[in-house]
Length: 278
Image (cartoon, rainbow, N blue to C red; front, side, top):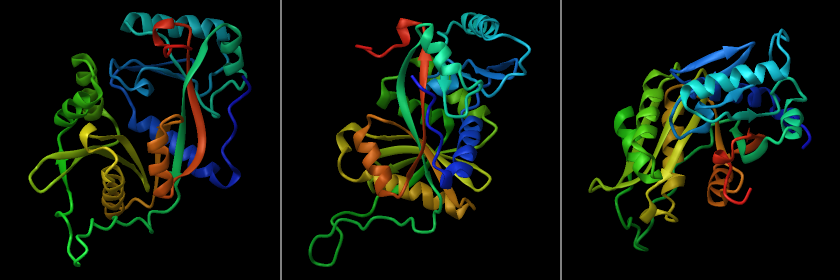
């Protein structure tokens, strides 16, 4: 596999800032560095919080020595070794080096950016054809990190350990996470999501629509509400991460104006981490 493509020239600045902001937002209370590589060891469900981010080494250790040290850290944490490979990973040959040693690549993910929040607006409420709305527009409600982790974890089928790890990461991250529920007037939850504002850049994370309410536009409204709230707090641009094969989410974010900036994937030599059929 060749090196992951670099971001388009016009998006390189915001792409790199999105990478940095994403790393800040996904910071784990359990992390260390090995010769410059950032190792995160959270037991949560999100792979970005339990992987190696090869941000550039000092060159003091050979790659095979670096790998031995990384593996030791993951074994001590009781986690399989994962590498998160991006166009920014160093050294440049690392992806090929791992590939040649049987490390499988999986879970390709797009990082998308929205260079301006100026045009973000709420979708119109469904009409009854007589100039009125069918229902009152859904509203946002703020959630604590603990409640958010439990509610989103239930939607995802997360284990108790994964839910605890998620809540711990949200509470201790260097960038403040703000979690919300989109709900109907009667209080019924429709969708969940959170924002993390880093300077003028806001990240959208963990966007989840309740199963029985999918396909009704609630994801679009939630994201628009979150971006408008971030804009109110001073954000001017946005980023997010979405699985390449998540067709509905890809369409949702394209409809909001997000542009593809770059792609990353994970690598592991542990079959327990590989998707079925890989």
